[in-house]
Length: 179
Image (cartoon, rainbow, N blue to C red):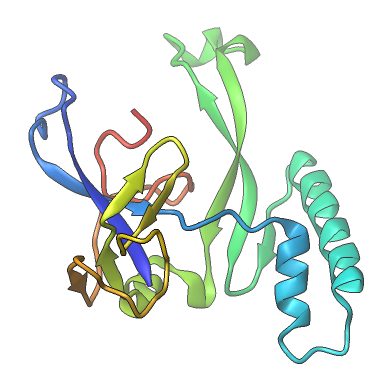
């Protein structure tokens, strides 16, 4: 179950000021050790320690390869590559590395993990309790996050649409994401 909170765009510089949008609520952040434990519980002959070792090495290798200018594709997940944030130069001949403000990780969904597939498979429910400081929400008054619970919340099926970029970092539902 994907839960969301609604919020109003209050940015006076945008034409969409006053409109309401949905923002995904993160239940929790799963670290690499927790992912390894989860994977080990899926009828695999490998221990969580062995899986953690492979995943740790994979992360290091992706980091190294991306910093060498390569794109790394993990099928049905994402293509990882570097993107650049730049200021505009007045002309091509005046451009220098001084105009490059930062490098960032891009993660473009691929295969069975594209926007369409996620939208088609998503079951949505409005979160009732939300703590912006912790990035968590609950659909029940008791703080539980049980998927089957819709205490006081409204459930919605189907898909969402947005105009987010494929460079990651946003839900594609807000004109002022991250503001």
